Image (tube, rainbow, N blue to C red; front, side):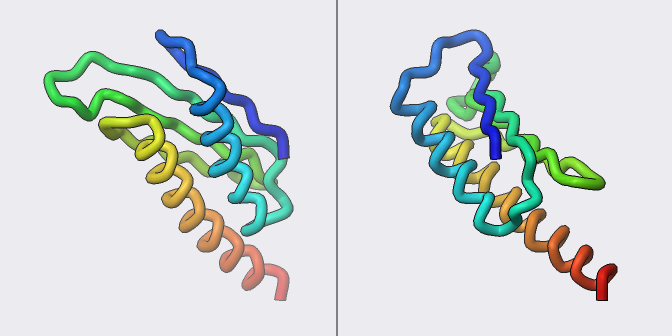
Length: 101
């Protein structure tokens, strides 16, 4: 699986990029049909501390899966987004197994 990481309006350090690659890379254990992952990290203006957003889009045959989570840290937003995608992958996998049997 190819993983592309973009950071908008800031420069992501190597530690954050490695963290994102690790967490998103683990999604490949739920499906070998993931072709690509697009990760976008951005900071938005907000009155609260929850101003960091992680958007992850997985390219799989048929449909793309997408998750966007906002949190007070990028690490937490990445964890929450990857967790949501894990659930989506499991649901997608169940539906596709039913279709092929």
